[in-house]
Image (tube, rainbow, N blue to C red; front, side, top):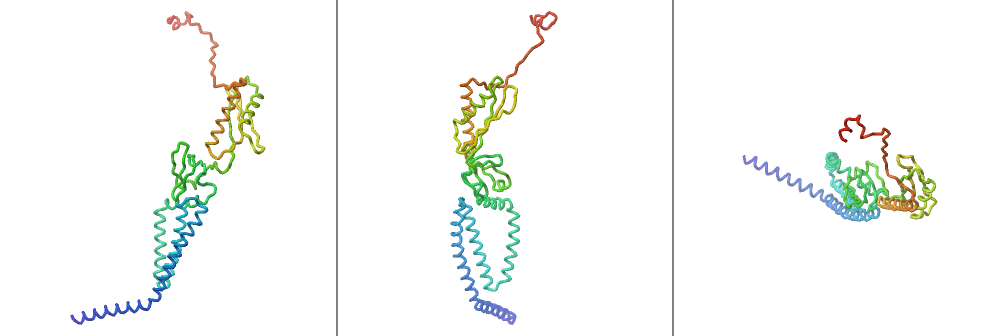
Length: 299
């Protein structure tokens, strides 16, 4: 019994001595690994600040800039970790970490598929010049001013001051209309005049009313076209260009043009008819006709 105990103590002492010897032998490699990790940490901090500063010049969203900085820092630290493990001759451990990272990345990617899709879409939107903060856009049935593009969603402020939060993935996968990309918009005014109206005079008055509101720097003309013989009127459209960058400017311009055309028509006795239904009775009814028992009883 005593021999077994002594043998066990000897084995334990031998293992401890072996560990100490291995530690002393690998002490230079350990020091090198620690130095590599410290250097990589400070390099990662510098890279983080540099990447955030560089990204903020092109991306107005702080969340996206910070994300890019953190990703660059993680890459630097990961490289430092692999170099440190290599310096300590832990190649097998390095292979195990790489295999585990691949499996973990696959599991996390499947679990957070929607979240990662919105995150990547937010990064893509941040680099798109065709949609920026302050633009007036229309997408997915909503229209408003872009006030924020973050890592998960895009925020619109509508006419009524309500905020609409739209996932970034939805913006990427669906078309959108950006009113702020151009400085001009075409306004279309539709109207109808009575059949008794002088059509030449109507066209002249409409052109003059619109021309008195907006002056154009280019050669774009005011377009006027009669479109149809309707039930109660002869309908026409008038098209012209105005300086506008959002839907509100477009509505304002159309409203002003309609008031100007209506005022001009009133001053020149041009009738803008509303739908009229005429009832005509060709069979002369005689309520006193004694042959009709119903009418006779009423009399």
